[in-house]
Length: 329
Image (cartoon, rainbow, N blue to C red; front, side):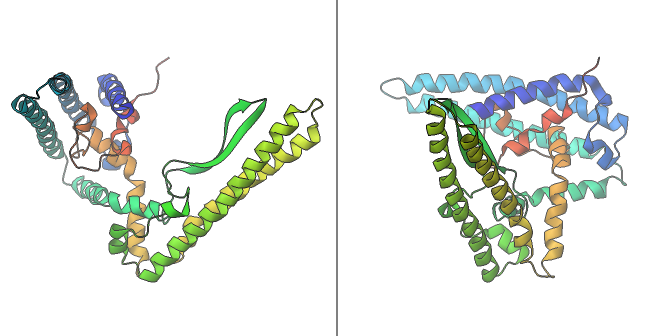
């Protein structure tokens, strides 16, 4: 539900932003050297699609409400449920098909000089599953970080916890994947390389657990010191310094995971890895190309809450935020 709300808000903001026309500056503009006329036509096409999709989304919401009502009946009516589920699927397919048609229309606006760079975008987009696995294996920097989170105050003492913000998969050694099939196939990683990566991540996760336990101990000591009649600044300061020292140690050791794992790559694997790295640098351009329907978007129907089996991540649907123009004075 929170994801759908975010999608709806981002779509609404995007709808406001595209009203500014071709004055909007995108990374996509500079990457493809789009003319103002090309940009204006794509924005107009996307706005028409967005308005139409919003109507379809409203109907989907009505049908989903009807499904809830049917599910509450006794006995259940299989035909009544089936008709409504079919309508939901028809709406999803209509959205996907219409966006694909719009993407083809927008691609037809590209010049001969722009087409090779567009094909590079398409190639980079196909590497996203391998990029996700490379981040999971810490061969590429994951989209998360280790932070010291200060929670609620209890008895005057803040509660601290070292954790990863984002799905980095290093909260526990047992959560570390035992393989990365797409990445292994793309880079032709050997069994020894995979085993070494797993060992590196497991060692870090175990070490980090010991640091977490020490932080918990320090929390208890801080709470005890804070509860004393006469609070000792030196005693408190010593413990807070140790917590900050631990945070820095974790951040420093974590920062070495990616370069250390990259050292395992052979000379033959490095060019393929560089292709992944270059594809990462094009991700925001890809997001924009999808949000403006220059490229087909796996989340075209998810914005109104309709999904198929596609890998539709938050990253793929957050692009509309990048269309917001600077605030005018």
